[in-house]
Image (cartoon, rainbow, N blue to C red; front, side, top):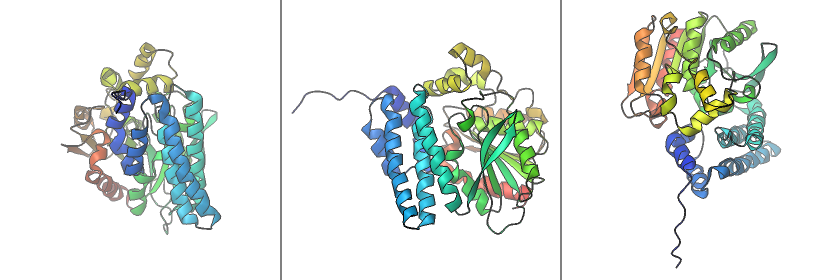
Length: 360
């Protein structure tokens, strides 16, 4: 028997498994696949290829189901494949060509899934600063002009990951419009992260108001992780937002900088189009609610976990103290970042709350 000791896993792999395992499973990754893929790799360089290979297996199931005419199954398989490809890409910023290839597959799989989901989805193009933002609109079945929520993703998430987040709102009669804003998803290559994210949100609201099949006078906003900052910031600046959900959003990203995981800091550097960490830190300092939280007057539901090692629960309390509108603060004692380990504590509760405010 060999006396050789297998080398320890790359600390970046260990960090990804430790910080984001619950999120992967909560958002559509099969637990067995998570264990298989993360157990099969030792270095971060292997991460994207391993997840892409497992995504390809789910994509093949979808293509096979489509060829057999099982379109509902095809849609489910392809949407799941998109999530796998997305998690191959999500923080793999040190190899942009490989990351981009996985990202393209994630987009293609979810786009192909959209017509076959229940309810179906529509890829939309939103005019913005002379270019376009891309989003996905899904409407609950059997409703004429339902209320709508805009969904803002975080630093390493994008619209290909949000199927599980959309489901409880759709089930309660609320349309969902998730979009890739500056520094996110399809926009990240051309538009850097910006502190004044409300510029993008207002463009999406303008678009929603031009649609005759949703009721933009009953419009809410939802944001996850850094998106929790984006949703709060947007609610402070655009009064067309009638209700806001902020999930583990930072109060001041610059103050959080030094305690962020290394992979997160590097992803922020790349997606803020910064040439150095010092430059990225300066951009991070522009992402703050210090001067605008007091302008949030719509009802807001804030969720945080006491075990969050990325955005401390004190940030949620600070936001809750400063808002001027009705505020619900849910602090989960044993919850991690976005409380993905205890999703049953907030997923249906925030959807019920939003339906109560907007009328679902």
